[in-house]
Image: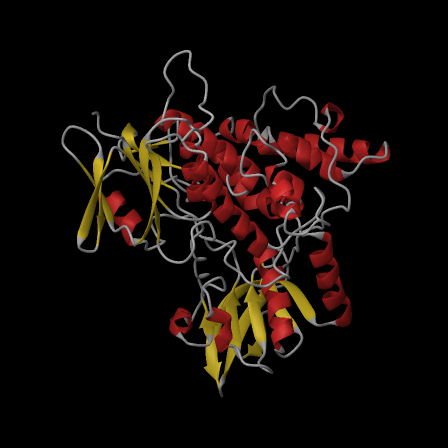
Length: 469
């Protein structure tokens, strides 16, 4: 009897759960080991929250984990709450339950010989084996594998550079608000400064307000931009919404921005919504990104990214309304400024800011500072022991702009010399380096399905198995 191929998937968030489910659905015998650092499979950072107010920022109709079954999530969700519709913005906690159910369903319908093993452990290294494959190294154990998938999720945000950066070691600083229990140290009545003004800041501001912190809550970013709101209706995907002329030269950020702005205004004059234009661009974004030179990509990150992010990564209508009420009442104060430094003063933290466009700095006093700037993608600075070990072995090639890791077209990781691996693959947000769009379910589910086809190809002429006992 031939040995079953062993595929180890490191990471138990959305990407890992989606890859494991797709491998089980391939209709081929295989041993799939899904490695999670802690907690339930499928939850990860994004879906581990228990707060009902923390909602998906994508409508339910676009959240199926299966690219070939667009209604899969909505059908499942309606078995829990029959009022859920494709346009609903459901809680992230509910979506975590869905991912657990997705894996159970895939297991139940898998062919004989295809099995999933769940392993709660921390992978510390992956050592290549002579003759092919590798061994995943844990504390006191090793796991041989024919293929290894890094399904790594979001990492803690980087600390902004500032004078007095030793403050980041203080118990008055929350380095990552998504670490379970990290906000519990903030007591009712304390004043809080949030670093960042994106979706994370919105979620944390609502959470902190409910905990009874002193208001207003301050939020600071270089441009002071908050995410725009989703429309009540879903964007209309149509050829008319796609800006014309994006394919031709010159492939520059300036030309793309001019074309998109011009078309969004014209689309609005005809009764459309700018959100339709952003939605139409989504499928084209990886292609447009890949056509930019490194210089142009750097220009986008420096000048355009803040505006792109607030239009592309929008807040659910209910969440946006709640934040608007906080802004109007003065319970939330948003400033466009750069953090210059920190200084402890009489039980508080004096934070020095330079408002955007100003030459003089200002100071505010708070009792807690929370880093809500969003996940770090600079693999050289993250400090993950697994990534550090693989970098030391020369098995990874970091993106020059610190957006993640470089891969071949089949998602095989490139080594330090630019050679694609035969056994090490990547799926998840660190694909941002090559695809830009690599953080949301609609893109990640497609990457997971494509990778499963690479890892477990079917014999010529054979379709995907339907699963049997």
